[in-house]
Length: 454
Ligand code: PFF
Image (cartoon, rainbow, N blue to C red; front, side, top):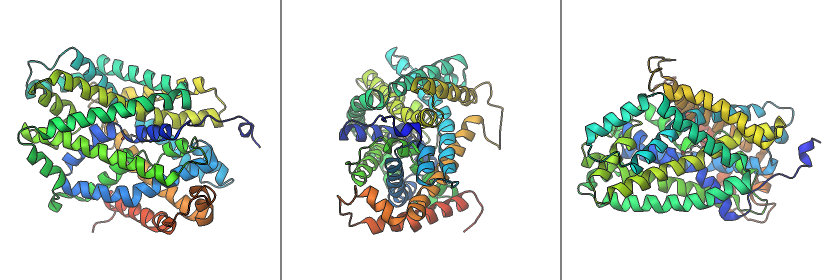
């Protein structure tokens, strides 16, 4: 028996705390920054439909699988596989997850840094007196800079590390319990403002009316990558969080609540953004700059715009923070439990390594923009490798592990809290994790990477 079997682990203190932390992880830049621009780049409604199908058929079973593994093993992402399948190579899935955490947080912190700059711009009323061209230029000049984006990235990483270093109950849970409700309130206010803009209908039609001719082969891979990214799946984040969930909590209930919250907030972000995109004649396929250019433009043209801008960028920064802590926690939990570092040391160590990688992501919009690896700049390489490759691949192995290695009896025992819940739908879950999810992931993967043409 290892030493850690005798050290009491930190855990979440309340049911609301679990939901706040897990939903805090899921709801982030992925919903408010990435979702609208990925939908925009992939043609709107039809992409949304594919995305929603992936959430239900793949996302839900992967999420429940992650919680099951984590709660059963009570360990970090790598340690969980080691404990549940000693002497097998399954722990490799956990290692892939820790690697993905490094890549994700490197580009995530770059964008999160932009949100802080935009909070600053909102406070100082920097959007006043500009127009769309001015906002475009403002964004372009800012991200192409060196010190300013790096400064904000560093501040963001310090904030993330500070919360993670404080632990689960006194750090992650304490902050997400306050920040998440604030976030929900803010996005509701923004949606109401946006749908009452003149000409909101066209944007809503783009988002909700499927046009299947706009769907390309790689749209499926993007939808899958987005589903994994948005729900925080495939890299052991929810294995790690699952390991802090008490044995009496209802896992399937948590999964449904977290996924519903994540999806509703992504849709609300779409509802807040697309009407504005169309009202101001902006190209919905604009890319990563979409929210940073589009929204200040609406704020400029509306009464009280100063406050709405401030609300929005604070919201984005909060959403980013409650997600980034969950990514960092994957690495920290591993360092603490397997490498025996103190939590503080582990946090500093992980945050520094990630920040170094992150510097390259930030600079790839500026002085390193000419550096191309496999035809992508550093930022895109990190984003594509992590979201579209590592996360779905991790998800594939996670469902295979639960479906085929743990198997029905053992999974049922964990999910039903040793039989306390009846779980009438358990066979459906088993069918999804054994067949539907792995086959779907494999197909999308092969098809999306161009290895197969249908
Ligand atoms: N789900 C987060 C978002 O939508 O912004 C990002 C993320 C967090 C991805 C945690 C992956 C992860 F493990």
